Image (cartoon, rainbow, N blue to C red; front, side, top):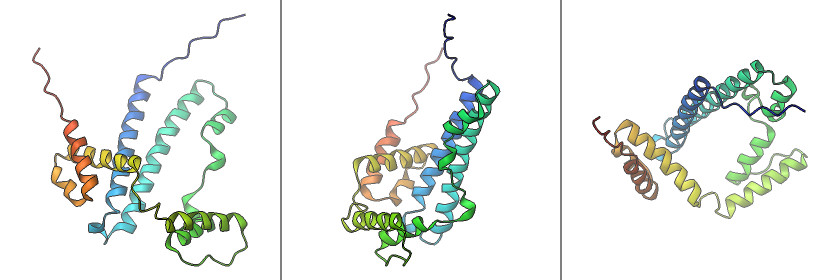
Length: 190
């Protein structure tokens, strides 16, 4: 019996490309959050959609690079399809589904459309209960931390901490801590 070969690490150029793409996704995600703030009410619809799809497309690019490498190294197409989770893929070109419209109706407390789709009714009821219970308005620690990290990172990268003044006080305060923690240490002279 032959020994099983050691798994090889991701090739460095591919690793660097994936890291670059993920970094871009993070910045797009920060902008999605940014455009939800009240001071950008004039453009939130367009820009949240653009930045969210930018993030999605950029993650797709990372996935396809890794998939192309896997295919090159002999991974079977059915295995790739499984790893890429193609069964759950949806095209944005078809637009929102009924289930998406039901979810928005539940969030906003508007009447459910008259269709007789039991799963849609369940989704509507679940989201409606979630919204009415105030759970959507509560900021949980994980969500607050994620927003603060993204905004703090952006402020640090842009070298503009005043950018954080636009956010709710608890997010801004935590984002400032994140930005402060990201101070780049001076390299020692060699």
